[in-house]
Length: 322
Image (cartoon, rainbow, N blue to C red; front, side, top):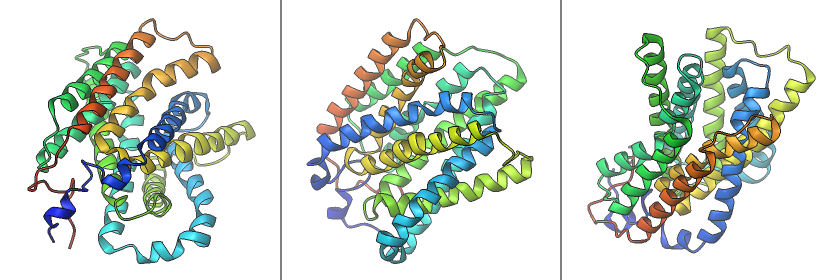
């Protein structure tokens, strides 16, 4: 199944005109989403539970919160979602689970700084995939993407270890960044026709099931936690999952995957500042300069997208499924 040229103009790479009109609201929601996901690492660090179990519960609890809304307001839409949208949503959920499954183990195999820097190469892979799919991001988008990633490297650094275990961890973190890029692009494609609630319900359900299987296979404990741990899991679900990931899925339709994935880089300095205020961890000396560099890169990406004129031959980020 191929898209008509007029339909292609509203692909994941370039938001439709109607969505562009809502950009002020989208940028506000994006700021809230970044603040939400910035709490993820500090909350995980303060939660006494296995990493994979934490990832499972934040998705499973999110499904529990979304279910009443889906049954009350979105059940009809969920039933009307076409086969293509369902398959793309399930695939997005699987890639999100893969992202968690690759990144969390890498944190114990290589340095946290290196893992973070490699995992946040997401916007590079997003831009490359869009280029392969026929879109031609302007030079400002490329420059802004690279500049923002440099900002993360300035903050975290990369140690060039030749230890075999560390190299394996580096590979896992890099794979996690690639999986995150696929997750953002798939979400942008589904959000062209489906609401945020319907999409995230299918996506998070798939992620939770995949992570549950991973927990059972790896032997990660899914219960027996203290009351404080359960409260932190609830906080992680509300702040990082529902206000973080869900709002990112909401704004990607209007802002596009390149801008959204580049903005996610702000999670790194955001998490560092939150850890300083909440956990008493002194922020790195380069936290504020790195924040400025990432913001400058994001500004270039946003300016670059304003100049995009999609070619007629451009294709959606992911071809339509039969």
